[in-house]
Each structure stands twice: as C-alpha cells, then as structure tokens.
Length: 114
Length: 115
Image (tube, rainbow over all chains, first blue to last red; front, side, top):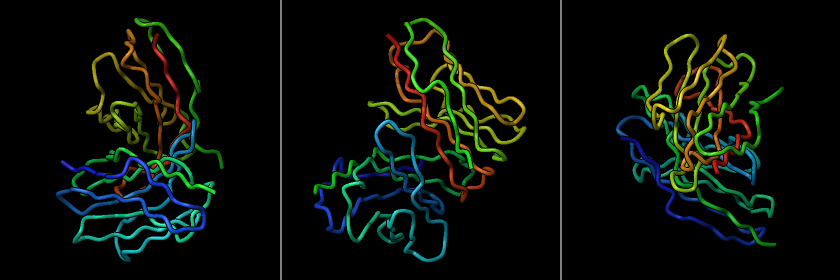
C-alpha cells in the first residue's frame, strides 16, 4: 500500500532563512505527489504537485519542491521564509493503480520566527 | 470563482444523535471527496464520487456513515447515532474529474463535536 512519511512534527526557522519540509513516499507505481498547506481553522490549500517531467516543481507563494526518485523524496522548499508561512503542511500521494484518494502524511508544523 | 463550500462550519451534538454535513463543490467539478481530520488519525479518506458512477465507500469507518450526491453536485455526509470518536473536522474536496493528476480543492471543513 502507498504511504507518505513526514519525519518532522515541527520545523523552526527564522524569517529570511531558507526552509525545508521533508516528505518521503512509498508506492508500488508511479507517484503523483502533492503539497498542501493548512492555516488555523481553515481547509487545505493546494501549493504544488509533481506529475511527470522536471524534478523541480514551482508552486504558489514562492514554494518549490524537488522530486527525487532514487531517494523517494519530495521535499518542500522556500529560499526565504516569511512569518506568514507559519502553518501546517501536508504531503500527499496518489498512485497510478486506480486509487482516487489522496494518502496524506501526518503533517509538519512550520514555525517561522521574526 | 467560488470555491468549495461546506455547512455548517461548526456542529455540536449529543452522543446518539444523527448529523448531516453538506458540501457544495466547485461548479463543473465532477469528482467529489470526503475526508476526516482528527487528532488521532490524521487525514483519512472517507468516500469518493465521480459523476454518476457508484461511489467508492472504502474509507467509511462504519455503517453509521453514509453519503449521497444529488444531481451530480451537492453532497451530504450523514452520521447516524454519533459517538464521541466521531468528533473531527470533516473536509470536502472536488476536482474537475477523477484523473490521478487532478488537483483536489478543499473546502473549509465542518468541525464536529460530539458530547
């Protein structure tokens, strides 16, 4: 069965510094990978996705993610963090075996300090 | 354009009562999904609708849970005889269709508290 792991419950970074939120996946087919962000008392907002093609995917709000097949990773990155980036981030996967649902990681709380 | 909307935003009920949660997907989206977000279980899939096809109910946790989608648009998730462990945020999402590459767009959720 497919799964996603987010090894860090929380990531702390100072404003202006680069940030990385880690995600690794385990699937038996070709992965379709997604990142979502959740602000307090809000639903999930789509950030970016990897389907095929370039391993570096650019998304909303200056975020990007790098797909690494050999390491089965899809880490979320941003060159310069903002305090407003503080939120809960979820990595999710779908596989090309007919499953239509998203399988989510447990989430990583990002805290950007001024 | 308008996003996915859900109602009510908050619901408090007593154990044993039935509740109905509503989801209005983005206009024109044929695929609709329900997920549950709880402290102990994270984000978990409940049910999925695609057009007029039979829904995928594989994620429903018990037979107290059911959902329908009328006219290929609005969906209602019903929980009968609610239990305290049903307390969670119920999220609805829609996508243009059910292709694997399609992005699912989420609503704000309904926060359910069972006393």
